[in-house]
Length: 117
Image 1 (cartoon, rainbow, N blue to C red):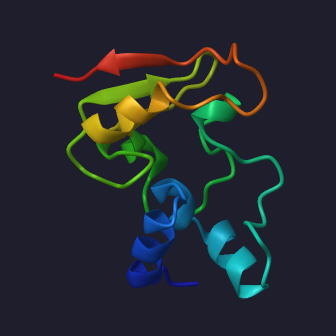
Image 2: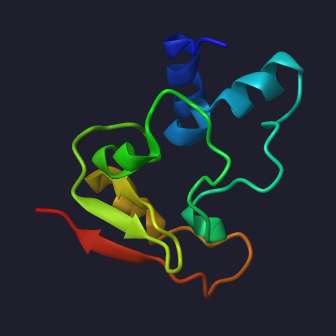
């Protein structure tokens, strides 16, 4: 199923993470009229995950090269979830928001911010 970039922009503007908006499972869920995606246990760093069910056009090895939240290619930070191999990029705007968020499952979800040079 091809990704509709206009819809990705709309979804991200409404609060969906860019990685989710680019995922085929999100697109499938929307096509079926679901309130979310068809992934069973997929989530981002606030749930101590790094989008484990992602299927889409962006290679997972490139997840550190753009902001996982908005898709901005100018990243200054990376989130590394302990025990996970992937690092997620974060732009300057959204790294500030992380301090204001409460993790879904526990306030002790240990993610680290890594300064990017």
